[in-house]
Image 1 (cartoon, helix red, strand yellow):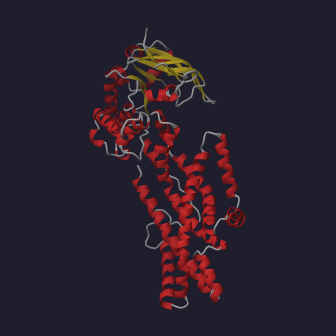
Image 2: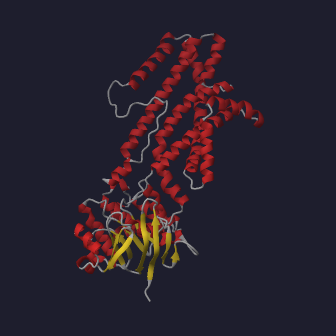
Image 3: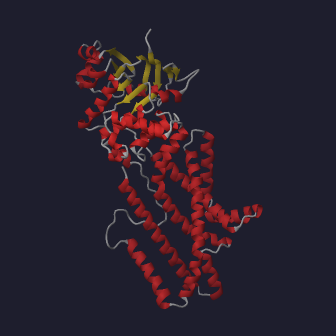
Length: 244
Length: 264
């Protein structure tokens, strides 16, 4: 039996003006790295944001490590504790320094002592290559550094799944690599990841499967080499021609 | 860059009757400088060079300054607390909370401050044995709390949506997210606006003279009734208010400037 950590069943999201998700089914196995690609408006970000309930589904359900998002036994906060999220715009807290950004949730949500949280944060900062920036404020960091802090902040909660919503889209080109390197390390370390991105290099290096979405539906799912080199669907082919 | 635009967006400016120097103006002669120079010169000429009766009037009138500042300071604290809850109520998810704070704002904004003051002191004061000072502070707090609520609402809503999302995604409750992430940022954003409210309130505090509190204006009126020097006395009263207000508005402008520089 497969060990699914994220199970998405019949996910629908109706924004009123547009149907962003039209019944999406997707399972992610523990330790798997799944990339979600697709044109803008295809519903890929909505799908990702549904996993930790930043978007509420209109119909369908999602389980994260057995905990459902809606219905009996639903526990949204539990799910949010177990999923880390990295945003396109970083969303660091500008009034807190790097250390405070990372330790806020472990202290307030997990009840860690300040000392424990800071020790852990120090290790994570070393991991993302920013050990010397603990006292800096977000406004003093480059985009790439901000995003690496954001990754460390999410990891500090020791999540079972990491969600990345276009993590490199707001970055200047020369900073994309430093963030992707951290993400690749993370993937190699066995972290379960769902990533919305168009970074094909990262896809080939780190992804187990690539999901192509269009108009609120999953069109095709395949390992990166197969999906990029031998797409089965016409819509996939068309999209890949645009971005490659 | 997206992130810079986002950080710049967390700024609101609310203007009222307080004389605020035009932002970015860096000339030697600006309207603020002309006015303060005129006011200070007039005061010095009258009080120090012309002496009587101005010296005496001045010493009487400034005795009201502690009360004017005391009422204003007490009421601004009350108004900030009320405004914070009103602002939070306005953006609450519960409809009842939104309605309650909405009705409060409509009610208070629809009644002149002078009427509120008289109502609280002469009508409610009879019932609850309120003295003049608490009545004045309560009336000003309630009145300005409604406006302050709007400032806090705008301030909270000026914080990018991603901040709340990031906090919630980390597992914080909505209350924790507000307390640790949203409100500290809101405070910084609304500080200049609160400074402006302080100035407006200091001017409005002259209304408390109708309920027998001996503020700057009241001291002046008492002096006039003794000496019949109405022109001389009220001219000095006006000058004292003018100088206080001008100095405070400059301080607020400097504070705004500093914050703009520190942004990001």
